[in-house]
Length: 276
Image (tube, rainbow, N blue to C red; front, side, top):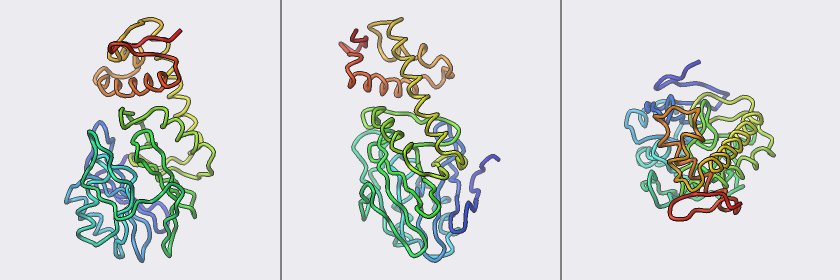
């Protein structure tokens, strides 16, 4: 089933999804905003600062919106928090935005929730899980009753996410995935795309996919030693449309940095080579 702008889906009693009207190459069908509860409402990822979407969130809520939880501060996930909080008086929860490009500096959390901390209401509880990689301040939220994991951009459906240094880290991303692999999760509710009903298989696939891509980086450096990251893209991402190669270079650089941290490659004068 394809998702459509403004679509409302009841996923379970007290769990609804609203699709923001921001489809694009980067966001797929758009950003998923989730509303939890019925007597008092929590919103996970209010999305972009689009008045139409902020109004739709308030119209969908059948009780007062009390809390706004943000997975991370990229411009398609958190900017609506400020206007939604102003309109409803809701408390904003998450981590502050790091410095750098593509960060929403308007997000000012009233409460910074720690890794492993539990957010509880009379209707449900969520456990925060720090999952850096796509963003250094990225959090997933585990619905402890349903064992559903709201993953923001850590895991999405239908594509892989860009890891963009310096805030993005491939090493952190893989470590975060390894952490989720050991958890008991019944479903993944991503920031983009449909519910993932086989979460462990999805996590396993992502780990293997990234490691396979990393092997291509190593093989490309054997073929083209002393190369720039841009020169390596056609070899490492030969299966990806050339229109996406500029974006792919960000993730390629993240792979190179991870390999450099492991002393498997080194960079001199902007060119990369294997250490052996």
